[in-house]
Image (cartoon, one colour):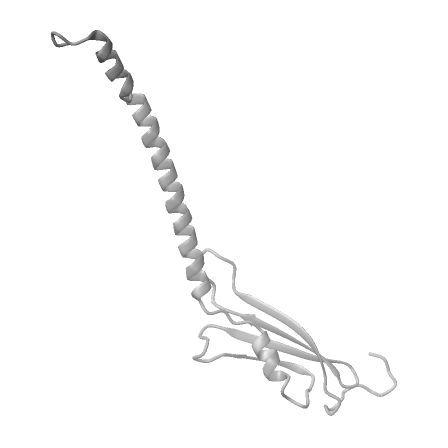
Length: 141
């Protein structure tokens, strides 16, 4: 304490300053908030990257098949070529009644690290009365 200083003024100054513990607690809270924000940003960027990857679903195959006038029972498989590399599809066509066909498509894609394999399954009923039938008329299936 300097000579001539009022003792009451020194105590007021020391009360106005932060203690070391208060500063450490404030810094701890600041860093916890910053790490939470950085974790949220990292998660958001990863999800945005997953959304940007092209995913193929079976609806595009069903829409192409819906343009045909005739269907035949059986199974088929193929890929999408250079349009969607790594993706494959399989189909199963079965006749339910005269002219009513059940079509099932399964599209499988490459696995993304850290997630489940990409799969899309769709079943649709199409009525194609002009298709050759394998059912004997009058016999239930």
